Structures are given as C-alpha cells and as structure tokens.
Image (cartoon, rainbow, N blue to C red; front, side, top):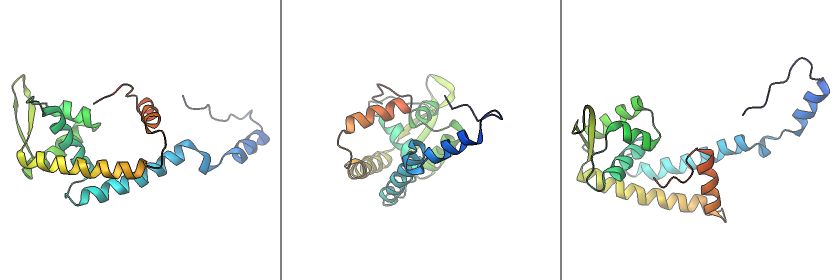
Length: 165
C-alpha cells in the first residue's frame, strides 16, 4: 500500500528529513527499474539474432508451451500466460501468423475464440530463442548466489507465488 502523501500539517523539518534519508541507489523501485532496463537490453540483444521482439518471443513461446502436448490454446489464454493485454496480443499474433510462425483458426470449444497452433518453423525458432534467453538469464543472474530465493521473491512481487507456468 502506498505511503500517505505529506499534508499541510507536516513540518518542513519532517519533509527535509525524509528527503535527506532518501537515496536513489537505496530505493528498491529505482534499482528494480534499472535492473529491468539492463536485463531488457540483454533480452533484446539475444532475440535480435532471431528477428524477434520480446513481445513476439513471449507470445510465440507461450503458445508453444501451452500447446506442446497437442492442446490448442486460445488467444486469450496465451495472452494471459505471457502477461500481455489481449489487444496487444492480437496485434503481435497477427504478425507471427503473417511470418508463418503461428496459425489461427476457430477454436473447437469456443467459436468466437481463436485457437493457436505453432507451426514447425515457429517451434524451431521458439526452441532456439528459449536456449538463447536461458543463456542470457544464466549470465545476468549469475551474480546472485541464491537464485531460488530471488525467484521466490520475484514470484511474490509479481503475484505469481507457486507459479510453475
């Protein structure tokens, strides 16, 4: 829950003390932002070899992951798994379809929904890109001694405790 904003009854001394105690380098949010930016630059570099954006990677690999045992996930489920809004997912999936990486058809269980199937070309690309990002993650997170503790903390912060997806 966010801290309450200072009110007119707060003294100038209280405000100055709060500012003096604040340091960007000790701010969890500020450091999380810069960590994310550094990680994202590495993700972009790793995916550039496969001509994929991060969004394309997330949706392609989510469709691949969810459909790996013969199921045909719908577009909404893939978007949810990837953590992407449905409108953005639809736009990106259209591009993946245009590039021959995904096929869309009427979903057998929901005529209003779209069933997604990753093509053989899409599966090969997804598998290669996953290996590349796993290597980047290993390099990036290698500086952390207890990665299982970090993962548990990130899952808690993302609201995805016990998430094995």
